[in-house]
Length: 318
Image 1 (tube, rainbow, N blue to C red):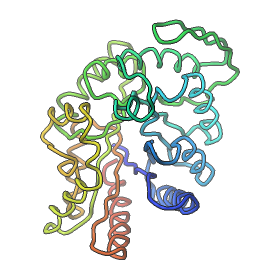
Image 2: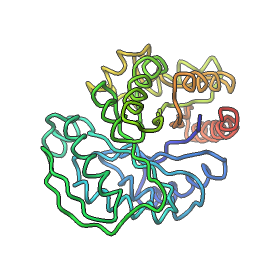
Image 3: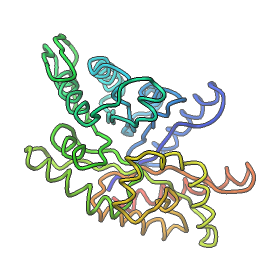
Image 4: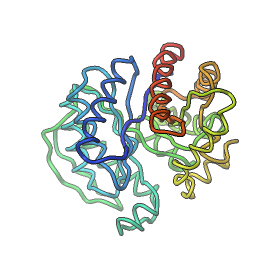
């Protein structure tokens, strides 16, 4: 299993955000992590622009989006942007995409949120054709009528990962993408629901085994502080639980909230949890560092202690 880190969606003014993104990605690369994943938060930086910034300040680490909402832009525009950044990064972009959630697409953006799975399938048909260029992109389906030439193409493969949670989306991801990017999925949900379905769909489509990228919060702490770490996860990350998609996914596992997903405790406890995700079929783990403490200084110290352990565990899980 490869180990990566979530970067981005941090509070602060714009200039501070930029310098912090650069600092964080330089740490991730120097620590030997395999990948870094940028979430697309509705009210924060554009995640593909973050990838471009981080690519300019690194040389090796894979840079992924987790994930770009499909409804926000045309698939030709997304293919053009992604291929440009993939080239600028030296072939290090992993493009995570997904149909997002009704409270983002419909309630915030004012766009239709009908039949998101069918829309995703249609979108991927255009996106994949454009990524496979150069040449004409001629696709007509229920959602798009596209006749668009392109001179762009990826010199090295650019994986496309889909945020697939339910059976239909996992079928689509297995057939039309290179894997899935997950949040709010515990080991049971992955091992008994996600991995079997997406692996079966990929095999039946004649595709290689898909990547399964799972995001989880991680806190290094004393055993006596584990409940405090879970409570903090529930306080600052609980908005994800308002989505019916995430609720259905939680129902397939043993975790009842994001706090239950948190890998918290000492180094041995965190490593044990990581290995449980690997055994469930996860190919890539994306950790969301979650420091704990009562003061700013305590939070900063917790963050750096957790960083040190994550760098060591990256070697142990490979």
